[in-house]
Image 1 (cartoon, rainbow, N blue to C red):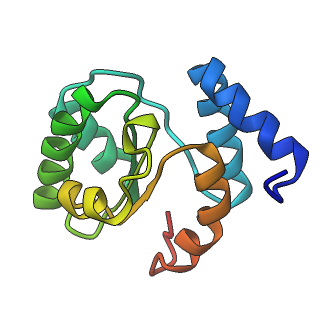
Image 2: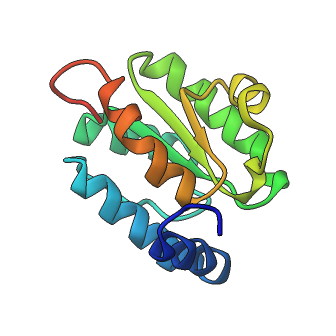
Image 3: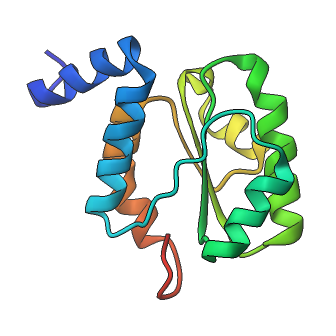
Length: 137
């Protein structure tokens, strides 16, 4: 036993089985933290993401990268967001991050990273505390 509550182990297994269910749980975690979430889906052009971020005055961009092949696109999108909205906090999660930790976070220019839903659940309270201003995430 790892010391995690049994339900967290269930969540981790669920994440490995069903990405949509994992994203729904992530949405619930963020909502519990007082965050308004807008799920955009996959493969949107950067202009569409930036447009919605402006429209809703988003304080955060959260990206999910399941495969390594998605990491370069994530890095490009993060660069575009940083240019247009330097105050936005960026979180990247997903299986592509695995145990790469800080080096990959720096390479992506993300503020926060987590390799799985358990990592998000564990780190989200600290992420929220580290977000400045009344529009925290």
